[in-house]
Amino acid sequence: MIKVAPSILAADPINLERDVRSAVQAGCDWLHVDVMDAHFVPNLAYSPDVVRRLHQTFPVPLDVHLMMDHPETLMDSFLDAGAQWLTIHAEIDADVHMLLRHIREKGGHPGIAIRPGTPVESALAYQDEADLILTMTVEPGFGGQKLDERVLEKMKAIRRTGWQGEIEADGGIREDNLKLLTDSGLTVAVMGTALFGKGNLEDAMKRIHALHP
Image 1 (tube, rainbow, N blue to C red):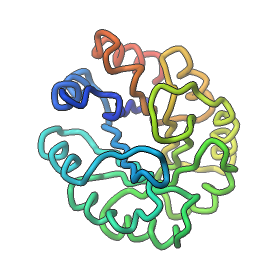
Image 2 (image 1 turned 90 degrees about the vertical axis):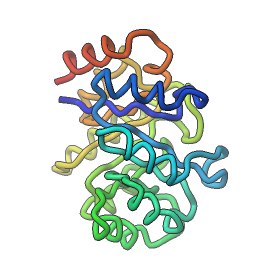
Image 3 (image 1 turned 60 degrees about the vertical axis):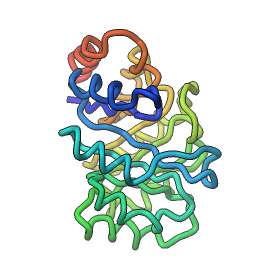
Image 4 (image 1 turned 135 degrees about the horizontal axis):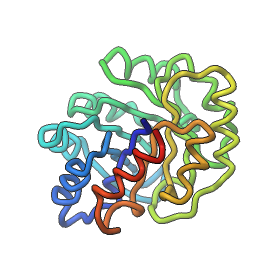
């Protein structure tokens, strides 16, 4: 069954606990937490303290995406706070192989992410150290953008290598375009504005899980 990971970036920041609780009670599989440093992307969010409170409050895996130029400065803090999945970007100027190995050594599931314009080969270079490949379907940093369908060929290319790990996509994913992604190899759908504030979350989650086994 496809995993649905609501992005808390799309929740009401004044009522974050309420919205996250609604998603968990509706049957979401993971919670997706975008961490932004205002350098790698032009936005700022969330701290290890937020992840710690989510981990203490909700019994679902936390999928933390570090959109940071220097993720090594906070990786341990997020893992210690309760992140089960921790994803860094292939585009950063760092020893990415070493960072992915460190995440695994600390007990986390390492993930590698690429922007829409980054060739899929940049992610495949790290597939031996990763448990998840995140193919961004919009330019990272803000919600509500339209899905970039170049990602479909990237996911197919990943599957052609024999990759058995998770393929995740984030950005512009809705119920009406999800089949395009699952047919291309998607296993984890990060959904934000398509879920929060759009009516009955439980009904939406049931429909997604029923249509995308």
